[in-house]
Length: 244
Image (tube, rainbow, N blue to C red; front, side, top):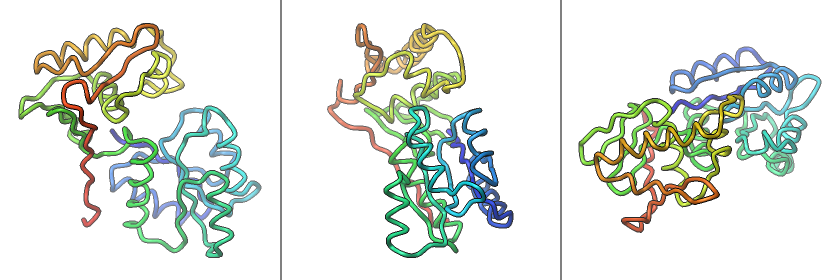
């Protein structure tokens, strides 16, 4: 599942370099040269991660990060600060305001992509391209394939996203509204019962390989994928090498 990265950087050369390398690494990118335009993009649709330059015109990156962290809708968006500041106090300040990581300029594209991958795995595992395994069930986000012992399961795009999210967030119960926000997107307005329809389709597809019981209905609360129902194991996420 391709992650969308919002690049907030006022220097065109740096912004173009970042955009080029992220798109080469199969990320979707949008960009803004200041915090005001960045906020407009965030209001349209939430990105999966924000690359945020510290020194921006009008409003600093630190101020913008503080605004994102105060808002319930945006407080969980992963943030990586881009900064030319090397003093320890400056780095600590960036982390204290809520940044998940920081990169000191100049930096290599390889380091940037490695940092992005690491933050996405920690904060939004369903946004990474890592292959996930649970009880012989294997999901490959890049090739859009779900298999059990070489038997491929045919899933529609929504069922695939739903399964990916649940496989990377096992044992937690999610309400229909929470699943709509996390899988469909917070700006998509559909009825909560839509979730039930896609859960039924997903279970029917998994039933062909005997894995439909992984998805449990929690009466009055929502749905949960229990990795331990049959095997007592947690999901395994295979990390891709950055030595390419």
